Image 1: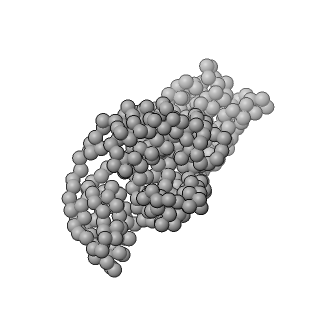
Image 2: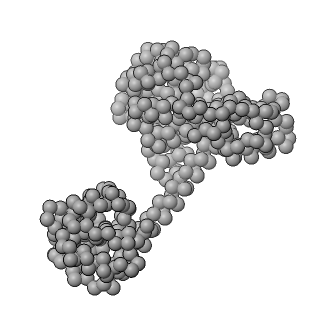
Image 3: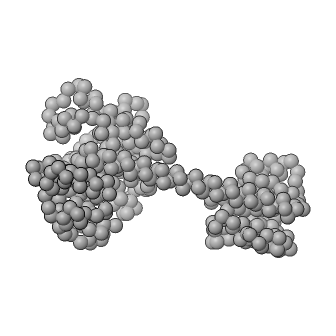
Length: 386
């Protein structure tokens, strides 16, 4: 609720006066002292506004508001004090980043006006965050769906990479937040700029020209440049940029950065991407990791050992949740289903690859194709994927 206000003072009668004055139109909560205020803030929050006295036993107002800022930067902080000397005001502004500095006694109308402005500031912060988050999620989804349509094999690899990241995070083997998962999914997005014939030559391990080699080497930089344009994805873009860089500093990009100075996410993705590539060549996971262990200088040795410990011996078919598998016709496809086999036309054109999670955009694309070509049915899918 945007009208929730926490008042903090060391005098009970002052707090009681706030409750009486503001009982209409405000959800007022009071706390006797800074320590109590922090307990209430954590147990009964969130609060739109915190209004604190300055001089209180134990924790003063600046110390309290500084801690409030650390716990929730969105909460608007105000100071209402009888000690309005210049140094106190400067300390409150510089350390507590307060929104308003009011002095006692404060006329009710002035206090009400200040609270109204503080709440409007809080609502503005929250609305901008909501807009940004929706824009961010939407932008990421668009990029992922474009990749899944333009280059299904790259999308399939990115999906496997994301799944490995999730598995390691679930095992608490790596600290994988949302940024690393998104970096995994967007790690191959630079491939959309490469001609399909060049991608195919590389996958079939055919001889490449110097121009083609350079083009492929720059895929991480291209992906970085695309992702960096999206607000709040700067760290993800950096992970993508260094995903092919060897731990010893060799590889692209040609920069003097190596070892633990490389982003941790890049070091993890380098290991998992190479593992997936070897598995797709037909190697068992334990054999693939054994081969990777002989590549001196390529990988962070500590992270490689973590991957070996956590992934060797783990069945790829083992799932935390059992889902229903079945065949469906084209008009029965639903967003959220995962393909258990390719979706193909009757002449062998692959529209989606096994393992992909179906979205509304995919369904629209497949139905558009079905207007021109016959789609093989039924389509084997995994339903109710969480």
